[in-house]
Length: 281
Image (tube, rainbow, N blue to C red; front, side):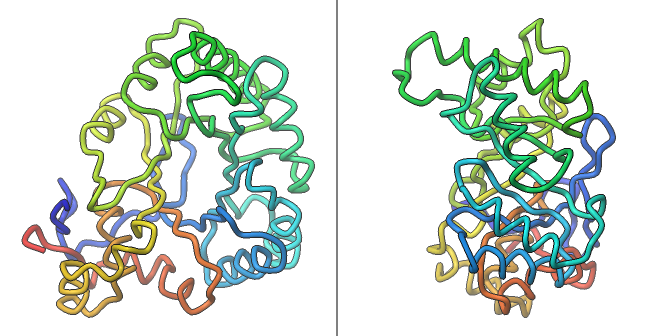
């Protein structure tokens, strides 16, 4: 497990930025709410609680099939559309020319919005296609072409990828047809899976990293090393793990449907300069 300490250029006890600035100037909130496996009243309640707690980034995907309760929560919050950053993803079943555009249009309709702040290609592979088939690369390129066009039309404010490994990033960055380069790569990052090489590549290419599963699917919350650091800094294990990712320069999108946990994940709690993780922790 990687050491839980201050990241490069992120000294302990220094307030962290509220947003990551993408290559096109769009501000991506550093702390958001993930909604994987959240549905119905549970999803509605979690999103509404998160918004009321001050979070302004909601992450979903077409394959999650929870846009209806998210739409209801957004409406119930009373917040103007422009104050909430909405991320969604085109699923492996929706890749390709035409299909990707229809997917984004459908997401917008189901969420009740004219535009999305960020759209990602959810996975580099295509559904019902063998992993080593050349069709995957062809469909990835076609999907990116559609997102690129939607971006140029102003239907989405930023575009990116998710779960792309080094070879997928290199492929997209070198594609002459990709006039608009990816602004975000969202993938799993936590102390047991720090992904330093992939994160370094993204940094070199000007791609912001959004970390999911920052709590290690829950098992890291009870790890002795994490609990020891949490006791030392007077914070919860979840706050320590999220602060670790934030100090590493990532945005985070932890998922919970429990209001008491969401209250721990507000910007003042996670980004404040009155605490942090030192290089020894």
